[in-house]
Image 1 (cartoon, rainbow, N blue to C red):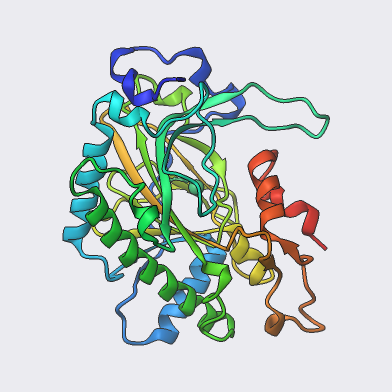
Image 2: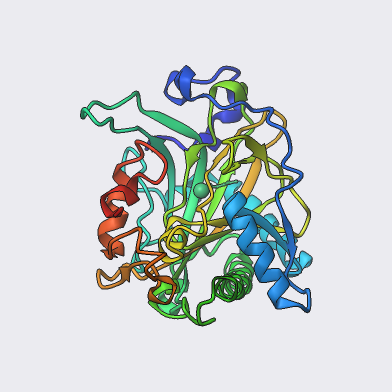
Length: 353
Ligand code: OGA
Ligand code: NI
């Protein structure tokens, strides 16, 4: 097995070559904190006002934080504890979830078994040549959390003993928050509030990331700059490390960890459905030399059954707002998403009008 980074990271004091990011792609680990990245209170009684804040944040950053989202502080604490315990299980327990020699990507389909993997980045160039392959400084454990079927839950870890209960409760709570945010986006865009309540939000999967303490954060990346592929990602970060690129000027800013808050990262599908009105969040992750960092993403995605069609929402289109994207199959798009990371939103290029 290409060993999990967490199994050896604490024993090295230099970064092995395969994990060193080429100079031109290194990230500045000391970017300023984005004090203006909105923190939106979902319990505010005026939903039109919240919707407006979400639309503005989605245009300025494609990212915002939410508080009073319905998932309790206590449950968040339990989830972080369970995730920490999971990654500390003996290697024999963790190896059950790894596959080949070189651990590969998680495929977001319903039958995907829980999977523990490392993530690599190589950027296919237009001339067909690949850059150097880099392995990110993180281990990720992912599985589907919705729709939940008994046999699917039975494939979730039995250890730690509380895993299924806590992750089940948490992912249900986050799904509700996610759907509520989508309703508010619809309100702000002028769409029926249930526009996403169908195959567009059919799947939720969870990615638990462990970024081990790193001997030299300046040469590694927890994740290089990217957009998420689905509709929306609600992320829990207990320690800073997530950076967001401001849309207007490309300035990178750190997202401040706020206890109890969740970070909402718009995926590229939102950009298409809103016909470009909502940005998808460009983000990356810096490592740190102080302590391990855990983050938990809950990604709401369209159905991957091959039938789900993505297109700009018809009610938004007019003579003055013609479609910016052709209709496309979500499954076909995903193939491009996983293979072409040559630039931001590369997976949308074939569909641009
Ligand atoms: C991701 C991601 C951010 C983080 O997994 O796609 O961007 O802070 N994670 O871990
Ligand atoms: Ni991401």
